Length: 122
Image: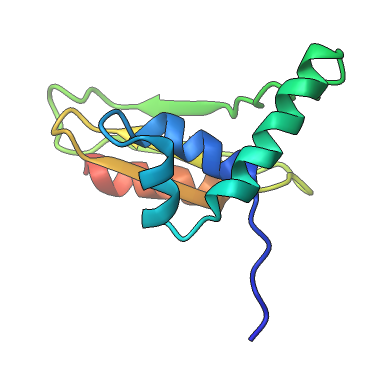
């Protein structure tokens, strides 16, 4: 059985977002990540950063969303989203709701994200 390649940057980002009570070793054990390999990756990242070899992260592209209607007076809000042709998918989105729930979406489009938000609002 072939092993799936681990994206350590995603593991590190998820750890930063999720864990305030667990240490990194526990987090890696819970999610099946080899702690020693992760630490080796992180050490190389820090060394590259120190040498000025860091990779610059591209700023997220903001999609235009038009909201029509008044949420106070009507139970639904209509959103119109225009999907650009050839637009790459959104790699990941984190939604934190006031109820305390957190949603993670991966490899989604602006259109799919807007439909989800419209269903949640309506």
